[in-house]
Image (cartoon, rainbow over all chains, first blue to last red):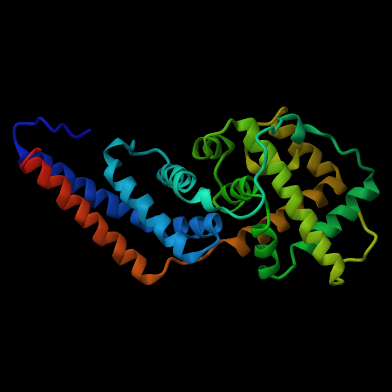
Length: 204
Length: 78
């Protein structure tokens, strides 16, 4: 809330110094996590670096507007997501998800017998043992909107509302993307697992 | 349903109802545990990329530049 028409420039400089101290104390430590997120978004270390630099520069310029006590990481992610969409999305690779994402998607009930459930649980446990490079590869091949939603939920632990704010979409869309993204990831991992003998072929 | 419960987000029924069910229903319990394992595995596989060392110093340099630029405006408003 800097007031440019203040009579003493010295006051404003001091306020800005305080702002900088607070930014270094609170925002800079989030660098590694924001970088990791940028890397998942851009899938390219050089672009990730550029994205992070732009994000932090923008964040610092508008840091006076950030409400202390609210979720700083979510705020930074929102700036980063907007920056990414405006700057990098023009040259994106990979499938784009159509905007017709209905909330009913996640509500589809899969009726399952007890046996199916037990088989599914065993399979899910097996997938958890797949090597990291396999998981990261499967994740990187997800459609972009699904990928970002799953990352924000399962790596960063943001709530649906926070993800909705960060991505600029309704909560219902977030839930739909999460459901479909997790399902697609699971299917992709299960295919790999079957092909490489981690689980028996012929299971659901 | 289990995923939303795990996500700690708003549920169509009470958390207690689900917790109670989980303590009584072994297949659902297994499913919950399995999903938890998979989610942890995904989280760990994807997290932990450290920013390159120079990036931090570049950022601090950028912030210094911005600070100089902004405080200069206070001295000589354009």
